[in-house]
Amino acid sequence: MGTAIKRREANDGCGCIRCRDVDPALVRRSTADDLRWSLRLFQRRPLLLILVAGLAFLWTVSTPAITLVTPAIGLGARVTTIIHNTVYALLLVIFLRGYFGAVVANEVTGRQTLTRQVVSYTTHRLVPLFLTFIGLFLILGGTLGVSIVVVSILVFDLGLFSPTIFDGIMPTLLFGSILAPVFYKFWIAPDICVVGDEGPITALRLSWRITSVHWRRVCLFLVSFTVTITAPDVFAELAIVSGHSVSSIPGFDILKTQFQWLTAVVWYCVGIQIYIRSTLS
Image (cartoon, rainbow, N blue to C red; front, side, top):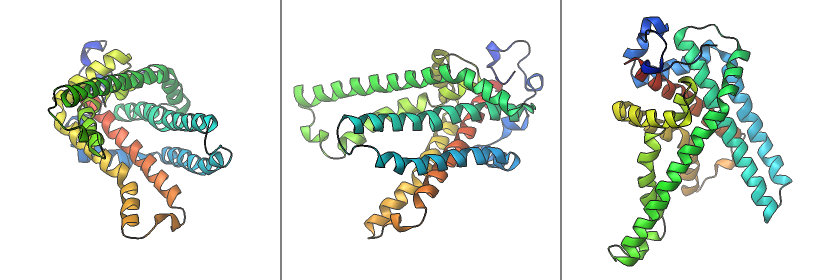
């Protein structure tokens, strides 16, 4: 249905902005402008807001019910946790990211596309999108494995560091700082897979290149994404430290999930615009 916005070298015919029917203002927008455009997207298409809020609400109210019928310990508890987390990732991380990739691509090109066509295109791209995430996690897992081996050699064989480096919060800070740049380099790969209609390997390769060129914008984007998405959890922890509990606030869990899901989708829209801009510049 023509949802994809391919890179210049993969585009049939002329790849200029006019021939692609892309809004020229997109090239000149800042990250703040991208954020405002993404927020206005929900004003222009309120059904999108209902979709995300509805899924977040269903997820929140279903979690306690699943907990009630799940054994507290044992194999059943582990299997249920895995299934629960998998469904969460499929809905929020894969389906909604893919769906809004198609929506944003249609919006910036002014295409009048039916909802069923957007869903059809998203469904068509779910397998390559899933494989892109698998590739990303394989890269992250390989990086983590190599870093653990290297740090272990430096600690236990060469004695350059004390074994206490593996105690407390230090492993999280150490290995988290190693994985963060890798995660950053491949963040846009899912958007490239959907909006650019690319395969997993090409999407990962292009993400590495785009984040090198647009590194300031991507860094600002990821920092903003992390700060806003974790804000409710930080607020809850600060409340506990000060001797209060947010669990007593009526509907806090529902509001928290709604905020996090909607915030994630808004930032997905911002990241998609970074990719689209890279294909035009």
